[in-house]
Amino acid sequence: MNAFVFPNFDPVAFSIGPLVIRWYALAYIAGIVLAWRYVLWLTAKPPRLLSRDNCDDLVTWCTVGIILGGRLGQVLLWEPGYYFSHPLEIVQIWKGGMAFHGGLIGVILAMFLYARAKKIPFFAVADPIAAATPIGLLLGRLANFINGELWGRVTDVPWGVIFPAAGPEPRHPSQLYEATLEGVLLFIALFILARRETIRAKIGTLSGVFLIGYAIARIVGEQFREPEVALSTSITWGQWLSLPMFLYGVYLVWSAKPVPPRPAASPSPR
Image (cartoon, rainbow, N blue to C red; front, side, top):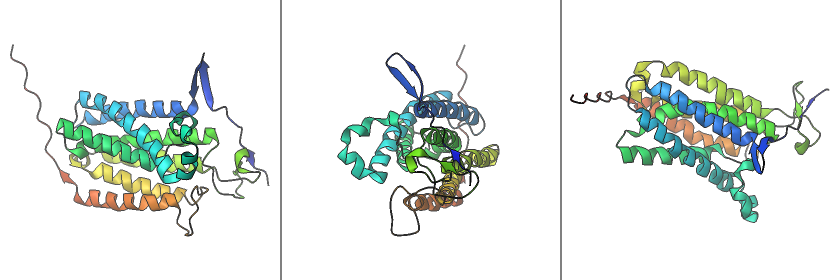
């Protein structure tokens, strides 16, 4: 059987003197910028619960949450033994190693603190960001593929890929499966829903659908992905972490209530 041999992409996109820019970093930067632009477009529609200034501020807050939460999630949830043995590598995020579930917790905390500081309903902040998150997930999974990491299980499908770091056997390109499920399909589903004003007004709905959709996508994707954490059960660690997301997402969709739009500011006297 013929298998595609991984082309061993250079993880460095380009360098300027001592400054080295990796594809992994570019994926995060592009994901954040594109998500920000999408959130601006989405929040310009009724019920207009966030202002342009709110969206601009949230870029910084959420970026910090993604980086800190994603890295700490990788360290604590996935590879604590390795990183505690190599503590200097904890800060080397440019080499890859960001856990989605940790990043999600970091972003939730950032959104909570921002919403409380600005006296904005939490899900008025969370919904548009949830709708934009698949953009970053798509680019992140493509970066995983370019890095030749998080490969799939051994397979005999015609499109199997031989990742040199994983041995000579062809494997599922599970990074591309996850990019399609978590990125493309989930974005399309949320985009269709977010176009409806009645859905946008029931804050918590988009966040709930995102959690449900991501959990399903991750549970399915894990069937083809080589487990990173060895468990004695047939359910992988990634699937276990996704189950609470699914259940809470169902609760959010079920309990979502419409909120009145933010009143327009009065014109300044002339």
